[in-house]
Length: 117
Image (cartoon, rainbow, N blue to C red; front, side, top):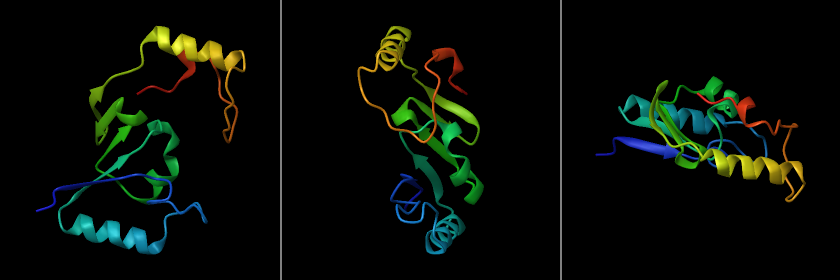
Protein backbone atom coordinates (compact mmCIF):
# COMPACT_ATOMS: atom_id res chain seq x y z
CA UNK A 1 0.00 0.00 0.00
CA UNK A 2 1.34 3.43 -0.96
CA UNK A 3 1.45 5.77 2.05
CA UNK A 4 3.26 8.81 0.64
CA UNK A 5 4.34 10.31 -2.67
CA UNK A 6 7.01 12.96 -3.20
CA UNK A 7 6.78 15.31 -6.18
CA UNK A 8 9.22 17.69 -7.83
CA UNK A 9 7.73 21.01 -8.93
CA UNK A 10 9.11 22.06 -12.32
CA UNK A 11 8.02 19.79 -15.13
CA UNK A 12 6.25 17.41 -12.76
CA UNK A 13 3.51 19.39 -11.01
CA UNK A 14 4.03 22.68 -12.84
CA UNK A 15 4.13 22.66 -16.63
CA UNK A 16 7.22 24.08 -18.33
CA UNK A 17 4.90 25.46 -21.03
CA UNK A 18 2.24 27.17 -18.90
CA UNK A 19 4.06 27.59 -15.57
CA UNK A 20 0.86 26.37 -13.91
CA UNK A 21 -0.55 23.18 -12.41
CA UNK A 22 -2.98 21.70 -14.93
CA UNK A 23 -6.53 20.74 -13.95
CA UNK A 24 -5.63 17.09 -14.64
CA UNK A 25 -2.69 17.20 -12.20
CA UNK A 26 -4.81 18.95 -9.58
CA UNK A 27 -7.55 16.35 -10.01
CA UNK A 28 -4.99 13.54 -9.59
CA UNK A 29 -3.65 15.14 -6.40
CA UNK A 30 -7.16 15.32 -4.94
CA UNK A 31 -7.83 11.68 -5.89
CA UNK A 32 -4.61 10.57 -4.20
CA UNK A 33 -5.51 12.56 -1.07
CA UNK A 34 -8.96 10.93 -1.02
CA UNK A 35 -7.17 7.54 -0.88
CA UNK A 36 -5.36 8.65 2.27
CA UNK A 37 -1.96 9.08 0.59
CA UNK A 38 0.27 11.80 2.07
CA UNK A 39 1.57 14.19 -0.60
CA UNK A 40 4.92 15.94 -0.32
CA UNK A 41 7.06 18.33 -2.36
CA UNK A 42 10.75 17.43 -2.86
CA UNK A 43 12.72 20.34 -4.28
CA UNK A 44 15.97 22.25 -4.28
CA UNK A 45 13.99 25.42 -3.60
CA UNK A 46 13.53 27.21 -0.30
CA UNK A 47 10.02 26.96 1.08
CA UNK A 48 9.54 30.72 0.68
CA UNK A 49 9.86 30.23 -3.11
CA UNK A 50 6.76 28.02 -3.30
CA UNK A 51 3.92 30.48 -2.82
CA UNK A 52 2.23 29.50 -6.10
CA UNK A 53 2.28 25.75 -5.46
CA UNK A 54 1.11 26.33 -1.87
CA UNK A 55 -1.83 28.38 -3.13
CA UNK A 56 -2.92 25.58 -5.48
CA UNK A 57 -2.87 22.55 -3.18
CA UNK A 58 -2.30 21.90 0.55
CA UNK A 59 0.65 19.49 0.60
CA UNK A 60 1.39 17.48 3.73
CA UNK A 61 5.03 18.44 3.86
CA UNK A 62 8.17 19.48 2.05
CA UNK A 63 11.74 18.34 1.50
CA UNK A 64 13.40 21.66 0.66
CA UNK A 65 16.86 22.91 -0.22
CA UNK A 66 17.76 19.45 -1.55
CA UNK A 67 17.10 17.89 1.84
CA UNK A 68 18.57 20.57 4.10
CA UNK A 69 15.15 21.48 5.57
CA UNK A 70 12.27 19.02 5.81
CA UNK A 71 8.80 19.85 7.07
CA UNK A 72 5.67 17.95 8.02
CA UNK A 73 3.05 20.65 7.86
CA UNK A 74 4.79 23.65 9.42
CA UNK A 75 6.98 21.60 11.78
CA UNK A 76 10.65 21.27 10.87
CA UNK A 77 11.56 17.57 11.11
CA UNK A 78 15.09 17.84 9.70
CA UNK A 79 17.41 20.81 9.67
CA UNK A 80 20.88 20.62 8.15
CA UNK A 81 21.92 24.14 7.09
CA UNK A 82 25.11 24.89 5.21
CA UNK A 83 28.19 25.56 7.27
CA UNK A 84 28.73 29.31 7.81
CA UNK A 85 32.19 29.16 6.22
CA UNK A 86 30.76 27.49 3.09
CA UNK A 87 27.99 30.10 2.96
CA UNK A 88 30.51 32.93 3.26
CA UNK A 89 32.59 31.39 0.46
CA UNK A 90 29.56 31.21 -1.85
CA UNK A 91 28.56 34.79 -1.01
CA UNK A 92 32.06 36.02 -1.81
CA UNK A 93 32.05 34.10 -5.10
CA UNK A 94 28.69 35.68 -5.99
CA UNK A 95 29.98 39.15 -5.15
CA UNK A 96 33.08 38.67 -7.30
CA UNK A 97 31.09 37.25 -10.24
CA UNK A 98 33.06 33.98 -10.05
CA UNK A 99 30.10 32.15 -11.55
CA UNK A 100 27.04 33.07 -13.53
CA UNK A 101 23.61 32.98 -11.96
CA UNK A 102 20.30 33.45 -13.70
CA UNK A 103 17.25 34.22 -11.66
CA UNK A 104 13.91 35.93 -11.92
CA UNK A 105 14.79 38.68 -9.50
CA UNK A 106 17.92 40.06 -7.86
CA UNK A 107 18.89 38.41 -4.60
CA UNK A 108 20.81 39.77 -1.68
CA UNK A 109 24.20 38.23 -1.05
CA UNK A 110 23.98 38.89 2.69
CA UNK A 111 23.62 35.50 4.41
CA UNK A 112 21.49 36.96 7.22
CA UNK A 113 18.90 38.16 4.67
CA UNK A 114 17.92 34.61 3.72
CA UNK A 115 14.37 33.74 4.84
CA UNK A 116 15.21 30.67 6.97
CA UNK A 117 12.34 29.05 8.79
